[in-house]
Length: 418
Length: 126
Image (cartoon, rainbow over all chains, first blue to last red; front, top):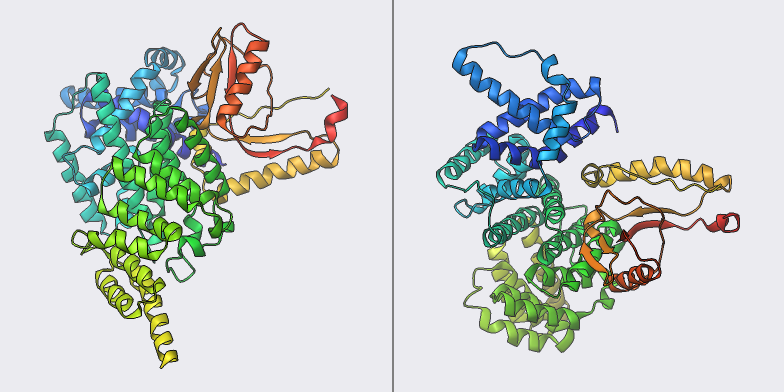
């Protein structure tokens, strides 16, 4: 790594902690962000000459705070800014500051910062955009690209989100145990949302949205380092790693979806799978199951199978049954039916999903899955109807193209039998 | 004399490498490893999973299992084992066994390995 690349990576890594601490100090998101930017600019001038500080986050907090205070003073008194040299030698202050900022403080600072981004008053898109901008430090341009909107529109969206945050009061006192666990749950949900925003992309969007999955994993790992004993955060991190491990195999060269059973398992990222499996192992010891852990366990069963036929569908069925009890939802039942079809056959699976139709009448996957079961049962005409309904509901070209394959095959078969 | 060379780096930074960046670093390190291996001087090489995957066992009459890495600064790293365990539970049991064999202060940090190359030619030289 070159020096500049290292500094860039170090600034990104220190960002959540530094912005979190500056936010506690100034109690204003814009001031905290400006202070951090200012500190980064000084780091870019200072670090190549003096070498990187022992604790980059502490350096940035110290320098950022001084810079923002100078700004305020200058505005008040029109005094000149102190010379750069005065803040370049920070060794003593830095140590002192690092001593004062203990681990627990960092933890609540970062959690608060993440919680503000995942605030319940914000829409899902606002949450994600704000987290990417403020915590991950992506530029507005990068975020706009990931959301496939113009830069000005994204700028406006972020500004509006910040306005809402300023209006909603977030207490700055150290949170109590209950409040902390509520914040943790909201933040976990925001990270999951961010990941899915990237994971659900298809076709030409895949490359543009891949960073969303990577940033979500970075945030999940960060959260887990702060809350080492939280089984659900282990589960969340494992889930994201185990899903993202299959990224390279999920689409073909033309951008079409490749189903799990057709994926080239050689393309799966073994390092991410190993990390995900290790985290599930850790989580299980706590015997405090939760939805993220169960979903991670399902993803793990897929990732563990060397060939599609090695998949332990019976266990997946059981895990989905557990998940249904934890979070009753027709979509989970629909997912479970895929495992049921493997274990007990398509007739049982179809019987399971038919009652869901009124609630999933607008859901693409419902008709795709229904069509597939009907096809397996040899009910081609009904399958065609279901696939037509699926195409009508497809949100992306890749989804429609995938169903089209089934329809084409059906058409070919019916021609052949004529 | 056999030397252990322990690798330290910022997890945040290494964890953010792209697959390509990671592969490039590993390839450059591979060149050094290959040279040492050809000279018959290389023992086991390992890369550990991140500290988020760590579990620690602190020595006590009833050893304490803690999620996360071993963070005490009063103790120093004095050695390590590479043990094949079917589950994390097995690894914890093994660490507890070591605790019973050698009580006192300190403990063990259990870290799953991402990469392990045994390069066992050195076995006779220890």
